[in-house]
Image (cartoon, rainbow, N blue to C red; front, side, top):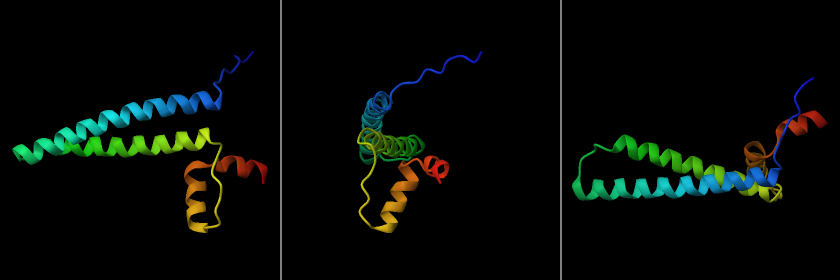
Length: 102
């Protein structure tokens, strides 16, 4: 009597991820730009923590955006460069799937 699992298609999840990461990236870019311009104009380091947090969130949003694009395009085509291909595989591909098959 387990409840039925409801899941969304991968394209829907990737689309939601892209929308959220785009909105978050734009918001963090605006905050970071305003804080950097204010620091140059008025000086001081009162908002350093907020600027650092905004920069970290912007980097996370860019990473989520890249991951959403990889999910929508159904993976990565390997070019033969072992370092780049290994990095892409570890970051974006499903390594658990490879372990289950092997």
